Amino acid sequence: MAKLFIPAKNETVTDFKTIQSTLKSHGIMIDKWEANTKLADDADQVTILKAYEHELKPFMTKYGFETADVINVTPKTENLKAIREKFMKEHRHSDDEIRFFVDGEGIFWFHLDNDEVLAVTCQAGDFMSVPRNFRHWFDLHPNYFVKAIRIFSNIEGWVPHYTDSGVDQKYNP
Image (cartoon, rainbow, N blue to C red):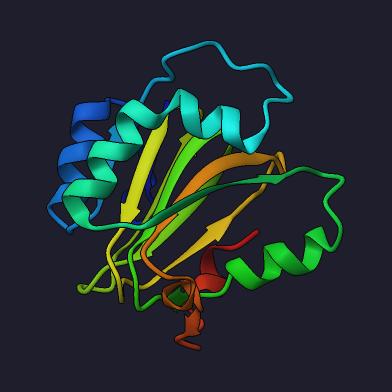
């Protein structure tokens, strides 16, 4: 279940429709997806993608995305600290950043045009689409576990372009 944190108000919102509406007003899409079958904890990429094909295929066709894969980051992932640090710096992408959380959780931080910052904790079942060129960063903290489907049109679009604004440092643990 997604949670929206508004640091300026020290407010946490858990009502999904409110979260969805708030993010939509900034061009960010959040939704809920369900598998069409029960997945084992050790399900492989093919099985996971098949379980969500009824959600993936229409979305990818509608928006022209070509590829989907599955990432699985755990506390045992090699170079976990370096991976985490790479994503915790404010950046942009030339393509939309789309994640569907199969398991685990992560926090998307958004730096809005009015300089407000919002944080959305995504968990299993949450679908998030961050528009291209949107300032954001991502944290695996506190559990360092996320299994997610990534959807993209080309890998080059996912290269992070760091803003070096320093805004992320104010909010990162």
